[in-house]
Image (cartoon, rainbow, N blue to C red; front, side, top):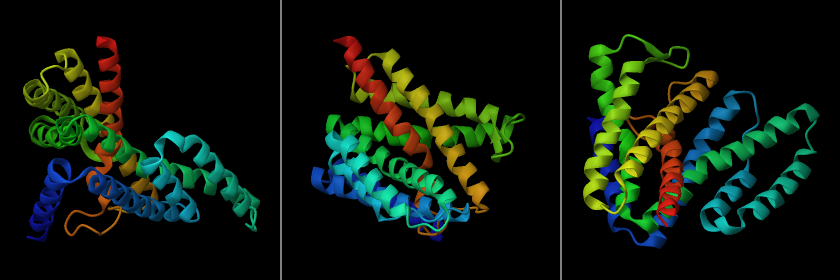
Length: 259
């Protein structure tokens, strides 16, 4: 029951934020989601024997959301400050992995939600598509993989996934994209919709595998326990965190190609 209640609450929150929230509320929510992802990913990092990424990484993440036009200069400034701060470490061998983990955590956790803000600015339909394409694909993968899955996709990382299910996931996302964007944004060429749906889905599947690999390396089943019955925030958003930036990039490329 708690799994169902959590799912209903997540759906209600997503519907409000995507369709009805003001731009400032949506940006604030994007930053909050990024912060939760950063916290959970930082926890996974500690299980890998690396010190938890600190506040500097969270500030870089905030800059990604709120000051994207100045992110390179701001990030490098934080890099300098962080490297100076890490010199306090008793073991100089930890400087590179700690700095690397902090920047990976910051960009992995916050960047997708910067692109979500950009997609919503273009169209709520485009944002909904980018978020929903892997949800639809996961459903297709589950039913096809359960019935016909014989060849393992990544047995070391995620033994339950099959190549047949992965292929069905792509097909399901493409069908969804053609039906949804074909009706809500008919000015987008069909080839662009197919490209965004297919590559966005594949990217999302890699996002799922990446998070699974980190969790498996950390010896954990879930990234957290914030969502009763569903694990952590990363467990629910890992696919979207790879898919959203790809959809945005392909939309920009497709739009430029038409000009």
